[in-house]
Length: 405
Figure: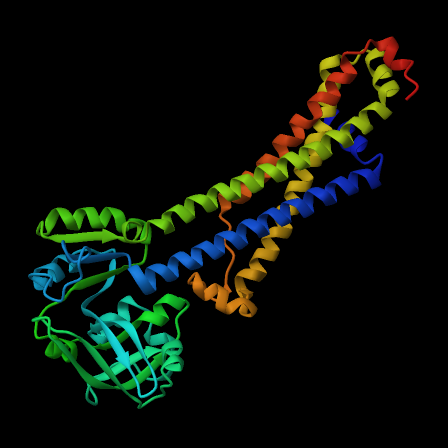
């Protein structure tokens, strides 16, 4: 009986009830969209940073990170590759021969990181092959092919087939170099990567540096969350002169950003729930005080004060539950649409590239976030009804019946 009475009481003033329900629905939808937008933004930046810059795990000579000397190559890469083949979580790896030098065209020059790679291996680790906007990925055809970014090509006034000169130090510290032909031009979501990285074939670079081997082994994984555990296992099985670092170690600011984003989502939730709670308290106070005489009559005919409290709490619970359910349903529909179309921020492409974010990204909201928001709305609705209920039941039956509100 209390349930039916509470539901009917809630709709005795449909305009007021509809207004607060609309506020709850809009609030729930807005919070979900904001959480999805920020989470999608951070997830996109994280994935791009891992795919294009750090990969899941990197292996180096233990002194290479302190001083990237061309002579500090990784010993016994064959046994390392055998070990990695036994790890099912690894989707690919690339052995890189890396030097820092200059790239020069007829019109300009620039300092770059030159990565000598095996085309087949690198295509499994970095999504560069699918991001080519002109030309083709590295192959054995032709002499000294090079693949660089569209941004770098524009800075150096290059096009497909243009000749560039790479200069750097060899194993003896002497300056060496050679001419290369632009084979392909790519575009990545990271401005820093576009500015500083060029790709050549590993044998071509080894011939010029005069030292055989790899300075870096980059490992790709489907689940990046497993990288720290895998890095620990590899470091325990490999030689102590090798450094095994996961993406969190290589770029700790990414881990900090993720933690900050979670805190931001919780803060947003708290602000919304607090504002909603004040609105519900206001609505319930008006609704309860307008019916003070009615509650007095109910208590006079035998309804216990505890049941009066339950009636008021049930009204607020229905209000919060209805608003939360409708809001979540609308949010699911909107998120499904955005999940298919994505959010296009091409207008801010240059700014996004500085942070390594694609111009089109997809919002992300977990089921636990939906559930947490819905439960928070219902809980705050219940708590918001306790004060109005207390104001009624602390009055005597005669005072309530004689109320002229």
